[in-house]
Length: 468
Image (cartoon, rainbow, N blue to C red; front, side, top):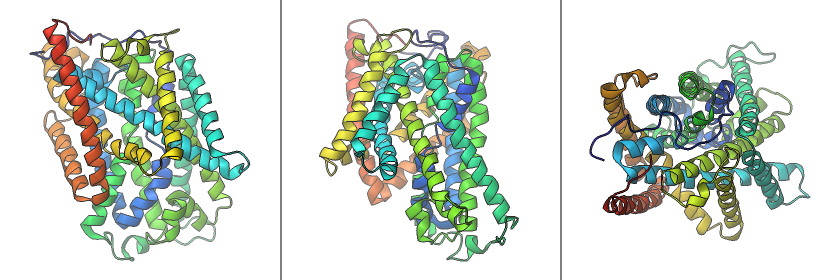
Protein backbone atom coordinates (compact mmCIF):
# COMPACT_ATOMS: atom_id res chain seq x y z
CA UNK A 1 0.00 0.00 0.00
CA UNK A 2 2.17 2.81 -1.27
CA UNK A 3 -0.40 5.60 -1.25
CA UNK A 4 -3.52 6.14 0.81
CA UNK A 5 -6.57 6.39 -1.41
CA UNK A 6 -10.14 7.07 -0.41
CA UNK A 7 -11.41 5.81 -3.74
CA UNK A 8 -10.58 2.20 -2.90
CA UNK A 9 -12.80 2.12 0.16
CA UNK A 10 -16.38 0.86 0.09
CA UNK A 11 -18.87 3.71 0.32
CA UNK A 12 -20.90 2.35 3.18
CA UNK A 13 -20.13 -0.79 5.15
CA UNK A 14 -17.38 -3.36 5.00
CA UNK A 15 -19.82 -6.29 5.22
CA UNK A 16 -23.49 -6.78 4.24
CA UNK A 17 -25.01 -6.24 7.67
CA UNK A 18 -28.57 -5.08 8.27
CA UNK A 19 -29.67 -1.45 8.54
CA UNK A 20 -32.16 -1.51 11.41
CA UNK A 21 -30.82 1.32 13.61
CA UNK A 22 -32.59 4.69 13.61
CA UNK A 23 -31.16 8.12 14.42
CA UNK A 24 -32.60 8.02 17.95
CA UNK A 25 -30.77 4.72 18.51
CA UNK A 26 -27.44 6.19 17.36
CA UNK A 27 -27.85 9.32 19.47
CA UNK A 28 -28.54 7.31 22.63
CA UNK A 29 -25.78 4.78 21.87
CA UNK A 30 -23.37 7.72 21.62
CA UNK A 31 -24.56 9.19 24.92
CA UNK A 32 -25.05 5.96 26.83
CA UNK A 33 -22.01 4.08 25.60
CA UNK A 34 -19.63 6.13 27.72
CA UNK A 35 -21.84 6.43 30.82
CA UNK A 36 -21.06 3.33 32.86
CA UNK A 37 -20.21 2.09 36.32
CA UNK A 38 -16.80 3.77 35.98
CA UNK A 39 -18.56 7.12 36.31
CA UNK A 40 -21.20 6.14 38.87
CA UNK A 41 -18.88 4.21 41.22
CA UNK A 42 -15.24 4.17 40.11
CA UNK A 43 -14.89 7.96 40.07
CA UNK A 44 -14.96 7.89 43.88
CA UNK A 45 -11.41 6.53 43.96
CA UNK A 46 -10.28 9.26 41.58
CA UNK A 47 -11.81 11.93 43.81
CA UNK A 48 -10.04 10.46 46.84
CA UNK A 49 -6.71 10.81 44.98
CA UNK A 50 -7.15 14.17 43.25
CA UNK A 51 -9.53 16.02 45.57
CA UNK A 52 -11.39 18.95 43.99
CA UNK A 53 -8.85 19.00 41.15
CA UNK A 54 -10.75 15.99 39.79
CA UNK A 55 -12.79 18.65 37.94
CA UNK A 56 -9.62 19.68 36.10
CA UNK A 57 -8.65 16.03 35.49
CA UNK A 58 -11.98 15.23 33.85
CA UNK A 59 -11.88 18.46 31.84
CA UNK A 60 -8.41 17.66 30.45
CA UNK A 61 -9.21 14.05 29.62
CA UNK A 62 -12.60 15.12 28.25
CA UNK A 63 -10.88 17.54 25.87
CA UNK A 64 -8.63 14.72 24.64
CA UNK A 65 -11.63 12.43 24.10
CA UNK A 66 -13.49 15.16 22.21
CA UNK A 67 -10.53 15.46 19.82
CA UNK A 68 -10.39 11.68 19.35
CA UNK A 69 -14.13 11.48 18.67
CA UNK A 70 -13.98 14.37 16.24
CA UNK A 71 -11.26 12.57 14.28
CA UNK A 72 -13.16 9.29 14.38
CA UNK A 73 -16.37 11.05 13.42
CA UNK A 74 -14.65 12.61 10.39
CA UNK A 75 -13.47 9.21 9.13
CA UNK A 76 -16.71 7.39 10.02
CA UNK A 77 -18.88 9.94 8.20
CA UNK A 78 -16.63 9.69 5.13
CA UNK A 79 -16.60 5.89 5.20
CA UNK A 80 -19.09 4.23 7.60
CA UNK A 81 -17.90 0.70 8.39
CA UNK A 82 -18.71 -1.83 11.09
CA UNK A 83 -14.95 -2.18 11.60
CA UNK A 84 -14.74 1.57 12.33
CA UNK A 85 -11.20 2.59 13.32
CA UNK A 86 -9.81 -0.83 12.31
CA UNK A 87 -10.89 -0.18 8.71
CA UNK A 88 -9.52 3.37 8.80
CA UNK A 89 -6.20 2.22 10.29
CA UNK A 90 -5.87 -0.44 7.58
CA UNK A 91 -6.51 2.01 4.77
CA UNK A 92 -4.11 4.60 6.20
CA UNK A 93 -1.29 2.52 7.66
CA UNK A 94 -1.64 -0.97 6.21
CA UNK A 95 -3.35 -4.29 7.01
CA UNK A 96 -1.08 -4.87 10.04
CA UNK A 97 -2.56 -1.76 11.70
CA UNK A 98 -6.16 -2.79 11.02
CA UNK A 99 -5.43 -6.26 12.36
CA UNK A 100 -3.80 -4.93 15.54
CA UNK A 101 -6.42 -2.27 16.31
CA UNK A 102 -9.36 -4.57 15.54
CA UNK A 103 -8.37 -7.70 17.46
CA UNK A 104 -7.05 -5.77 20.47
CA UNK A 105 -10.39 -3.92 20.70
CA UNK A 106 -12.29 -7.21 20.33
CA UNK A 107 -10.27 -8.67 23.19
CA UNK A 108 -10.96 -5.58 25.32
CA UNK A 109 -14.72 -5.77 24.76
CA UNK A 110 -14.94 -9.50 25.50
CA UNK A 111 -13.09 -9.16 28.82
CA UNK A 112 -15.22 -6.11 29.65
CA UNK A 113 -18.38 -8.17 29.09
CA UNK A 114 -17.19 -10.57 31.78
CA UNK A 115 -16.33 -7.76 34.20
CA UNK A 116 -19.71 -6.11 33.73
CA UNK A 117 -21.50 -9.41 34.21
CA UNK A 118 -19.70 -9.93 37.51
CA UNK A 119 -20.54 -6.41 38.71
CA UNK A 120 -24.22 -6.73 37.77
CA UNK A 121 -24.47 -10.13 39.46
CA UNK A 122 -23.05 -8.75 42.73
CA UNK A 123 -25.77 -6.07 42.84
CA UNK A 124 -28.63 -8.48 42.17
CA UNK A 125 -27.15 -11.07 44.55
CA UNK A 126 -27.42 -8.43 47.28
CA UNK A 127 -31.14 -8.22 46.63
CA UNK A 128 -31.69 -11.97 46.15
CA UNK A 129 -28.93 -13.67 48.19
CA UNK A 130 -30.48 -17.10 47.70
CA UNK A 131 -29.40 -17.19 44.06
CA UNK A 132 -25.62 -17.57 43.49
CA UNK A 133 -23.78 -14.88 41.54
CA UNK A 134 -22.75 -17.21 38.73
CA UNK A 135 -26.42 -17.96 38.01
CA UNK A 136 -27.15 -14.26 37.54
CA UNK A 137 -24.15 -13.89 35.24
CA UNK A 138 -25.37 -16.84 33.18
CA UNK A 139 -28.84 -15.29 32.95
CA UNK A 140 -27.50 -11.91 31.84
CA UNK A 141 -25.24 -13.51 29.27
CA UNK A 142 -28.12 -15.55 27.84
CA UNK A 143 -30.43 -12.53 27.65
CA UNK A 144 -27.97 -10.26 25.85
CA UNK A 145 -26.59 -12.99 23.67
CA UNK A 146 -30.18 -13.70 22.55
CA UNK A 147 -30.80 -9.97 22.05
CA UNK A 148 -27.77 -9.65 19.79
CA UNK A 149 -28.58 -12.85 17.90
CA UNK A 150 -31.84 -11.28 16.76
CA UNK A 151 -32.21 -8.32 14.38
CA UNK A 152 -30.00 -5.31 15.10
CA UNK A 153 -33.04 -3.17 15.91
CA UNK A 154 -33.49 -5.27 19.09
CA UNK A 155 -30.02 -4.23 20.24
CA UNK A 156 -30.88 -0.64 19.35
CA UNK A 157 -34.11 -0.66 21.38
CA UNK A 158 -32.46 -2.20 24.45
CA UNK A 159 -29.62 0.29 24.30
CA UNK A 160 -31.97 3.23 23.67
CA UNK A 161 -33.94 2.65 26.86
CA UNK A 162 -30.90 1.70 28.92
CA UNK A 163 -29.12 4.87 27.84
CA UNK A 164 -32.24 6.99 28.39
CA UNK A 165 -32.42 5.85 32.01
CA UNK A 166 -28.71 6.56 32.61
CA UNK A 167 -28.91 9.98 30.98
CA UNK A 168 -32.08 10.78 32.91
CA UNK A 169 -30.42 9.81 36.20
CA UNK A 170 -27.43 12.09 35.56
CA UNK A 171 -29.62 15.03 34.46
CA UNK A 172 -31.72 14.61 37.62
CA UNK A 173 -28.57 14.40 39.76
CA UNK A 174 -27.14 17.55 38.18
CA UNK A 175 -30.44 19.38 38.68
CA UNK A 176 -30.66 18.41 42.36
CA UNK A 177 -26.97 19.24 42.82
CA UNK A 178 -27.27 22.73 41.35
CA UNK A 179 -30.28 23.48 43.57
CA UNK A 180 -28.32 22.29 46.62
CA UNK A 181 -25.28 24.39 45.68
CA UNK A 182 -27.51 27.45 45.40
CA UNK A 183 -29.12 26.62 48.75
CA UNK A 184 -32.55 26.25 47.22
CA UNK A 185 -33.32 22.79 48.62
CA UNK A 186 -35.23 22.50 51.92
CA UNK A 187 -32.95 22.31 54.99
CA UNK A 188 -29.87 22.84 52.81
CA UNK A 189 -27.37 25.68 53.08
CA UNK A 190 -25.28 26.82 50.13
CA UNK A 191 -21.77 25.36 50.65
CA UNK A 192 -19.97 28.14 48.80
CA UNK A 193 -16.28 27.45 48.15
CA UNK A 194 -15.66 25.65 51.44
CA UNK A 195 -15.25 22.14 50.04
CA UNK A 196 -13.34 23.29 46.97
CA UNK A 197 -10.62 25.14 48.86
CA UNK A 198 -10.96 24.32 52.56
CA UNK A 199 -9.54 20.79 52.91
CA UNK A 200 -5.98 21.19 51.71
CA UNK A 201 -6.82 23.40 48.76
CA UNK A 202 -7.98 22.72 45.22
CA UNK A 203 -5.05 20.34 44.63
CA UNK A 204 -4.53 18.80 48.10
CA UNK A 205 -2.26 16.01 46.87
CA UNK A 206 -0.41 18.17 44.38
CA UNK A 207 0.43 17.20 40.84
CA UNK A 208 0.74 13.50 41.74
CA UNK A 209 -2.87 13.40 42.92
CA UNK A 210 -4.00 15.18 39.77
CA UNK A 211 -2.13 12.64 37.64
CA UNK A 212 -3.86 9.69 39.38
CA UNK A 213 -7.22 11.36 38.82
CA UNK A 214 -6.34 12.12 35.21
CA UNK A 215 -5.44 8.50 34.46
CA UNK A 216 -8.66 7.26 36.06
CA UNK A 217 -10.75 9.77 34.12
CA UNK A 218 -9.16 8.94 30.75
CA UNK A 219 -10.27 5.32 30.93
CA UNK A 220 -13.72 6.25 32.27
CA UNK A 221 -14.46 7.86 28.89
CA UNK A 222 -13.98 4.60 26.95
CA UNK A 223 -17.07 3.41 25.08
CA UNK A 224 -17.80 6.24 22.67
CA UNK A 225 -16.28 4.23 19.82
CA UNK A 226 -19.34 1.95 19.67
CA UNK A 227 -21.45 4.60 17.95
CA UNK A 228 -19.18 4.61 14.87
CA UNK A 229 -19.40 0.80 14.74
CA UNK A 230 -23.19 0.96 14.95
CA UNK A 231 -23.43 3.68 12.30
CA UNK A 232 -22.79 1.14 9.53
CA UNK A 233 -26.10 -0.54 10.42
CA UNK A 234 -28.18 2.61 10.56
CA UNK A 235 -30.69 3.82 8.00
CA UNK A 236 -28.58 6.85 7.05
CA UNK A 237 -24.98 6.07 8.09
CA UNK A 238 -23.30 9.32 7.00
CA UNK A 239 -25.86 11.74 8.44
CA UNK A 240 -26.45 9.53 11.48
CA UNK A 241 -22.88 9.29 12.69
CA UNK A 242 -22.21 12.97 11.95
CA UNK A 243 -25.15 14.11 14.08
CA UNK A 244 -24.50 11.59 16.87
CA UNK A 245 -20.84 12.58 17.23
CA UNK A 246 -21.54 16.31 17.14
CA UNK A 247 -24.26 16.24 19.79
CA UNK A 248 -22.73 13.62 22.07
CA UNK A 249 -19.34 15.20 22.67
CA UNK A 250 -20.36 18.33 24.54
CA UNK A 251 -23.17 16.58 26.41
CA UNK A 252 -20.83 13.91 27.72
CA UNK A 253 -18.29 16.53 28.78
CA UNK A 254 -21.09 18.31 30.63
CA UNK A 255 -22.22 15.10 32.34
CA UNK A 256 -18.73 14.08 33.48
CA UNK A 257 -17.23 17.43 34.42
CA UNK A 258 -20.54 18.70 35.77
CA UNK A 259 -21.05 15.63 37.96
CA UNK A 260 -17.57 15.88 39.46
CA UNK A 261 -18.07 19.62 40.11
CA UNK A 262 -21.36 18.95 41.95
CA UNK A 263 -19.86 16.19 44.11
CA UNK A 264 -16.72 18.00 45.27
CA UNK A 265 -18.66 21.26 45.84
CA UNK A 266 -21.26 19.61 48.08
CA UNK A 267 -19.03 17.10 49.88
CA UNK A 268 -15.52 17.29 51.38
CA UNK A 269 -13.26 15.21 49.15
CA UNK A 270 -11.92 13.58 52.32
CA UNK A 271 -15.33 12.06 53.16
CA UNK A 272 -14.83 8.28 53.34
CA UNK A 273 -18.27 7.56 51.93
CA UNK A 274 -17.29 9.10 48.56
CA UNK A 275 -14.99 6.17 47.81
CA UNK A 276 -16.93 3.59 49.86
CA UNK A 277 -20.43 4.24 48.48
CA UNK A 278 -19.61 5.99 45.24
CA UNK A 279 -19.84 9.78 44.73
CA UNK A 280 -23.46 9.83 43.55
CA UNK A 281 -24.85 7.80 46.45
CA UNK A 282 -22.70 9.70 48.95
CA UNK A 283 -23.94 13.05 47.63
CA UNK A 284 -27.62 12.05 47.65
CA UNK A 285 -27.28 10.61 51.17
CA UNK A 286 -25.65 13.87 52.29
CA UNK A 287 -28.65 15.78 50.93
CA UNK A 288 -30.98 13.51 52.92
CA UNK A 289 -32.71 11.95 49.94
CA UNK A 290 -34.34 8.72 51.14
CA UNK A 291 -33.51 5.50 49.33
CA UNK A 292 -30.60 7.10 47.44
CA UNK A 293 -28.46 3.99 47.78
CA UNK A 294 -31.02 1.66 46.25
CA UNK A 295 -31.94 4.16 43.54
CA UNK A 296 -28.32 4.40 42.44
CA UNK A 297 -27.87 0.65 42.69
CA UNK A 298 -30.65 0.30 40.10
CA UNK A 299 -28.98 2.92 37.89
CA UNK A 300 -25.57 1.22 38.22
CA UNK A 301 -27.16 -2.14 37.41
CA UNK A 302 -28.70 -0.65 34.27
CA UNK A 303 -25.35 0.90 33.35
CA UNK A 304 -23.62 -2.48 33.67
CA UNK A 305 -26.28 -4.33 31.69
CA UNK A 306 -26.21 -1.63 29.03
CA UNK A 307 -22.43 -1.98 28.76
CA UNK A 308 -22.75 -5.78 28.45
CA UNK A 309 -25.26 -5.37 25.66
CA UNK A 310 -23.18 -2.78 23.81
CA UNK A 311 -19.90 -4.66 24.20
CA UNK A 312 -21.29 -7.95 22.88
CA UNK A 313 -22.62 -5.99 19.93
CA UNK A 314 -19.37 -4.11 19.34
CA UNK A 315 -17.20 -7.23 19.68
CA UNK A 316 -19.32 -9.25 17.24
CA UNK A 317 -19.33 -6.47 14.62
CA UNK A 318 -15.60 -5.89 14.94
CA UNK A 319 -14.94 -9.64 14.54
CA UNK A 320 -17.27 -9.78 11.54
CA UNK A 321 -15.53 -6.83 9.91
CA UNK A 322 -12.08 -8.34 10.45
CA UNK A 323 -13.18 -11.64 8.93
CA UNK A 324 -14.83 -9.87 5.98
CA UNK A 325 -11.41 -8.32 5.29
CA UNK A 326 -9.65 -11.68 5.48
CA UNK A 327 -8.21 -11.19 8.98
CA UNK A 328 -9.82 -14.03 10.90
CA UNK A 329 -11.59 -17.40 10.74
CA UNK A 330 -14.18 -17.36 7.95
CA UNK A 331 -16.81 -19.00 10.15
CA UNK A 332 -17.05 -15.86 12.31
CA UNK A 333 -18.16 -13.88 9.27
CA UNK A 334 -21.26 -15.91 8.41
CA UNK A 335 -24.41 -13.80 8.42
CA UNK A 336 -27.93 -14.98 9.25
CA UNK A 337 -30.57 -12.42 8.36
CA UNK A 338 -27.92 -9.68 8.35
CA UNK A 339 -26.64 -10.67 11.83
CA UNK A 340 -23.18 -12.25 12.45
CA UNK A 341 -24.58 -14.82 14.87
CA UNK A 342 -21.46 -16.99 15.12
CA UNK A 343 -19.44 -13.88 15.99
CA UNK A 344 -22.06 -12.97 18.62
CA UNK A 345 -21.87 -16.46 20.15
CA UNK A 346 -18.07 -16.51 20.10
CA UNK A 347 -17.81 -13.08 21.75
CA UNK A 348 -20.37 -14.08 24.40
CA UNK A 349 -18.63 -17.38 25.15
CA UNK A 350 -15.28 -15.63 25.56
CA UNK A 351 -16.91 -13.14 27.92
CA UNK A 352 -18.44 -15.93 30.00
CA UNK A 353 -15.05 -17.70 30.08
CA UNK A 354 -13.61 -14.54 31.65
CA UNK A 355 -16.27 -14.78 34.36
CA UNK A 356 -15.33 -18.39 35.09
CA UNK A 357 -11.65 -17.42 35.28
CA UNK A 358 -12.55 -14.79 37.88
CA UNK A 359 -13.87 -17.62 40.08
CA UNK A 360 -11.26 -20.26 39.26
CA UNK A 361 -8.05 -18.19 39.05
CA UNK A 362 -8.74 -14.68 40.41
CA UNK A 363 -5.15 -14.03 41.50
CA UNK A 364 -3.27 -14.95 38.33
CA UNK A 365 -5.09 -15.58 35.04
CA UNK A 366 -7.99 -13.20 35.63
CA UNK A 367 -5.69 -10.49 36.99
CA UNK A 368 -3.51 -10.97 33.92
CA UNK A 369 -6.57 -10.36 31.73
CA UNK A 370 -7.38 -7.17 33.63
CA UNK A 371 -3.83 -5.88 33.27
CA UNK A 372 -3.76 -6.76 29.58
CA UNK A 373 -6.78 -4.61 28.72
CA UNK A 374 -5.66 -1.74 30.97
CA UNK A 375 -4.35 0.57 28.23
CA UNK A 376 -5.89 -0.87 25.06
CA UNK A 377 -8.23 2.07 24.63
CA UNK A 378 -5.18 4.36 24.42
CA UNK A 379 -3.69 2.13 21.72
CA UNK A 380 -6.97 2.38 19.78
CA UNK A 381 -6.99 6.18 20.13
CA UNK A 382 -3.42 6.33 18.83
CA UNK A 383 -4.42 4.37 15.70
CA UNK A 384 -7.41 6.69 15.24
CA UNK A 385 -5.23 9.82 15.33
CA UNK A 386 -2.51 8.36 13.11
CA UNK A 387 -5.09 7.18 10.55
CA UNK A 388 -6.93 10.50 10.51
CA UNK A 389 -3.70 12.40 9.98
CA UNK A 390 -3.08 10.46 6.78
CA UNK A 391 -6.64 9.95 5.48
CA UNK A 392 -7.66 13.61 5.84
CA UNK A 393 -5.00 14.64 3.32
CA UNK A 394 -6.21 11.95 0.91
CA UNK A 395 -9.85 13.00 1.35
CA UNK A 396 -9.09 16.64 0.65
CA UNK A 397 -7.22 15.64 -2.49
CA UNK A 398 -9.58 13.00 -3.90
CA UNK A 399 -13.07 13.32 -2.37
CA UNK A 400 -13.55 16.57 -0.44
CA UNK A 401 -17.33 16.14 -0.64
CA UNK A 402 -17.02 13.29 1.88
CA UNK A 403 -15.79 15.63 4.60
CA UNK A 404 -19.18 15.96 6.27
CA UNK A 405 -17.49 16.22 9.67
CA UNK A 406 -14.14 18.01 9.84
CA UNK A 407 -11.46 17.82 12.50
CA UNK A 408 -10.89 21.26 13.99
CA UNK A 409 -7.67 23.12 13.08
CA UNK A 410 -6.24 20.20 11.13
CA UNK A 411 -3.49 19.06 11.43
CA UNK A 412 -2.47 20.98 14.58
CA UNK A 413 -5.13 19.59 16.92
CA UNK A 414 -4.42 16.07 15.65
CA UNK A 415 -0.81 16.57 16.70
CA UNK A 416 -2.03 17.93 20.06
CA UNK A 417 -4.12 14.77 20.55
CA UNK A 418 -1.15 12.54 19.72
CA UNK A 419 1.00 14.49 22.17
CA UNK A 420 -1.73 14.09 24.80
CA UNK A 421 -1.80 10.33 24.32
CA UNK A 422 1.99 10.14 24.53
CA UNK A 423 1.82 12.12 27.78
CA UNK A 424 -0.71 9.67 29.24
CA UNK A 425 1.55 6.76 28.29
CA UNK A 426 4.46 8.47 30.10
CA UNK A 427 2.31 9.17 33.16
CA UNK A 428 1.21 5.53 33.25
CA UNK A 429 4.85 4.47 33.21
CA UNK A 430 5.50 6.67 36.27
CA UNK A 431 2.80 5.05 38.43
CA UNK A 432 3.47 1.56 39.79
CA UNK A 433 -0.11 0.30 39.37
CA UNK A 434 -0.60 1.56 35.83
CA UNK A 435 2.95 0.63 34.84
CA UNK A 436 1.98 -3.05 35.11
CA UNK A 437 -1.04 -2.47 32.86
CA UNK A 438 1.13 -0.63 30.35
CA UNK A 439 3.58 -3.54 30.29
CA UNK A 440 0.92 -6.19 29.64
CA UNK A 441 -1.04 -4.11 27.14
CA UNK A 442 2.20 -3.32 25.34
CA UNK A 443 3.02 -7.02 25.15
CA UNK A 444 -0.37 -7.86 23.63
CA UNK A 445 -0.11 -4.97 21.16
CA UNK A 446 3.38 -5.96 20.02
CA UNK A 447 2.29 -9.59 19.62
CA UNK A 448 -0.67 -8.56 17.44
CA UNK A 449 1.51 -6.20 15.42
CA UNK A 450 4.02 -8.97 14.72
CA UNK A 451 1.25 -11.39 13.69
CA UNK A 452 -0.44 -8.72 11.57
CA UNK A 453 2.78 -7.69 9.85
CA UNK A 454 3.78 -11.31 9.16
CA UNK A 455 0.32 -11.98 7.75
CA UNK A 456 0.56 -8.86 5.57
CA UNK A 457 3.91 -9.98 4.14
CA UNK A 458 2.50 -13.44 3.36
CA UNK A 459 -0.45 -11.87 1.54
CA UNK A 460 1.85 -9.57 -0.41
CA UNK A 461 4.11 -12.46 -1.41
CA UNK A 462 1.06 -14.30 -2.75
CA UNK A 463 0.04 -11.24 -4.70
CA UNK A 464 -3.17 -10.75 -2.69
CA UNK A 465 -4.25 -8.26 -0.09
CA UNK A 466 -6.88 -7.48 2.44
CA UNK A 467 -10.36 -6.83 1.12
CA UNK A 468 -10.85 -3.52 2.87
